[in-house]
Length: 273
Image (cartoon, rainbow, N blue to C red; front, top):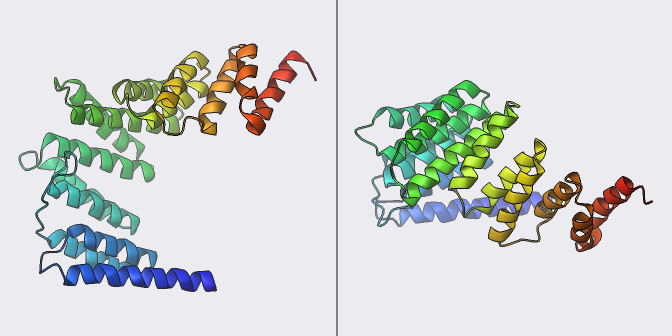
């Protein structure tokens, strides 16, 4: 009971703070203030209030003093609002908002349209509309591969689309296509440890242990937490599967308690138990 009461008080205080921000905005509130309120009301199971706040968010005319990465304020508004509609159980509204962006090539930039396709593909994927999701992501990768731009933003988009395709194909048990697309993502998004790890994991699942070691080593080199157990398990067991038992034993021995499982596997292989 006390934890529920504390949570309710926290939510009430959040609501008051957001409403205060709107009241003190001199008639020009940030659209994401309304989106945050919508998210709050969703947690409170007040769908009507949440949708009311999203409608207000769409009407705001706030001009951002700077750009968030490469997104302008238009897509910076539509993306969170559409996703919040989806979370409210109104996927048709979310889909139509993003389809509207995709269809207006004269109004939105190439990057905005690609991002809208990426978001729409994610919404389709969650709803098991896998062929629609695949088509959008393939359009993105084809368009980006045909681009001569080597700007960092273009590369980020390319990496995201390949990674999403990789996850989609994994979901559909198309393992070869999954690994191919995740390797493409890792090739492009070279400074992202999560992308490298996801590729290592996919390689491990299909039994390409040389590949899994290659990418987990890249992930470890990039990570702020190189001692993470997920990295160590992939590398250690890849070494075992390659029958590099001495190297695997050395690796697991340096892991303390967490290495006992790997050392046990090595002992069984050697029948040294």
